[in-house]
Amino acid sequence: MPSAPLPTLTVTTEADLIAACVRGEHRAQRQLYDQLAGLMLTVCRRYLKRREDAEEALILGFAKMFRALPNYRFEGSFEGWVRRIMVNEALMQLRQREMMTVSFEDFAQPENLATTAATADTQLQAEDLMALLATLPTGYRTVFNLYALEGYGHQEIAELLGISEGTSKSQLSKARAMLQRRVQFSAISAN
Image (cartoon, rainbow, N blue to C red; front, side, top):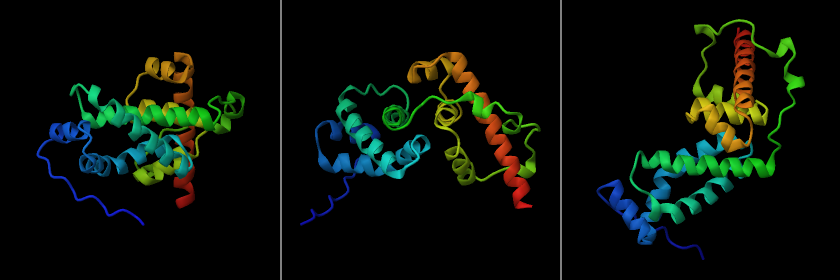
């Protein structure tokens, strides 16, 4: 028999909610999960193509977050702290499920590189951009997400992924070129 949903806990501050979670109050943990799960699933989905894999990363990430919560130092954004945990978990899942290396020969052909700058008529909605990102090879998509969406520097990306800083820069450049070419193709197809 399914258990009844826990009533929502009302706390006045984020610090109070975190303290209640650290004390093991299930309602507080549920409230924190409910507040962050949608956004954090979106973060995981940027790295993992299959929704099931992203959901698994989300659950494992929340488990790690709740275990690490007593060590949270209230420095910077709490959401940013949780996001870093989710990104790291998604990367761990990615390493287990997909090969992170990319064959540069496949994408070094001139037809795979953008030749003109994007213009105002090629602007995309966020949903369209996320769909285009999902079509990138794993390595390109991962570096692009970490750099452009999460704000990591190339040195941090290199350390996270176990690649050289030059490889991070190269994969970002090639990801941008592929995205630009696909944006242009989408604009041409739409007309």
